[in-house]
Length: 142
Image (cartoon, rainbow, N blue to C red; front, side, top):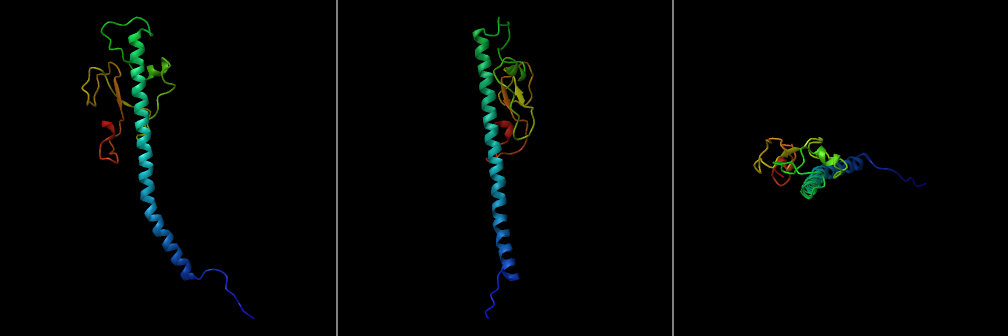
């Protein structure tokens, strides 16, 4: 009678586990980069959406859709929440990098690269994260 062995020997099992471990160690860093890249794309989308909404608010203000213009006012919203109140945005998107609902803002009278704002209005937004992007730039400079 012939006896056939079904299954793996111990050495075959060890070799298989070693190969799986090597492949997993190669794939793990690639998946971390993919996750970071997707968060960066979400940040770009959120920034674009907020900036377009701020521009739309300014256009409506200039047209007089919000009533009479106030002398000396820039026409930009006082806060980001005003974009929701005036129904330009449904909600303020969260910052995907810092996982925070807070955004850094610049007013019309601030310098273009200033991180500190006089908070008179919201002319521009940026991420509050100090982390570095895949391209080597800081997220708060986007």
